[in-house]
Length: 87
Image (cartoon, rainbow, N blue to C red; front, side, top):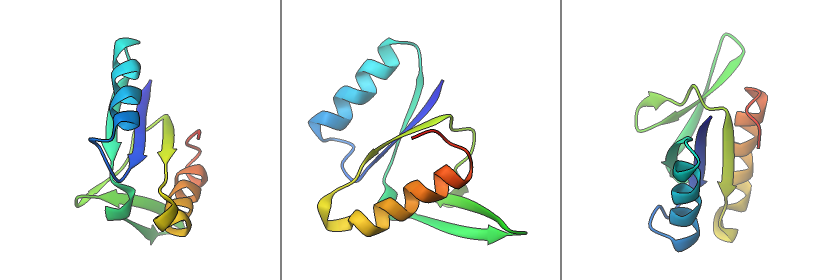
């Protein structure tokens, strides 16, 4: 399974542990700083971009949203949900 962990802090203990456990169970894991993501609408299809690339081929996201960016983080989660990614 391809998992994306949405976190501002890839070095945070909880984020590192989630990644370690997912890798130990054979999953592909990517940590994405949701604060550096943006959304585009092309032909009515929302796409999430990170570091200049479209985020695709993600089966599941694990949101680790900080209280200071709750609204923005929630908006990113909604965009993934609109792409039928499980949260």
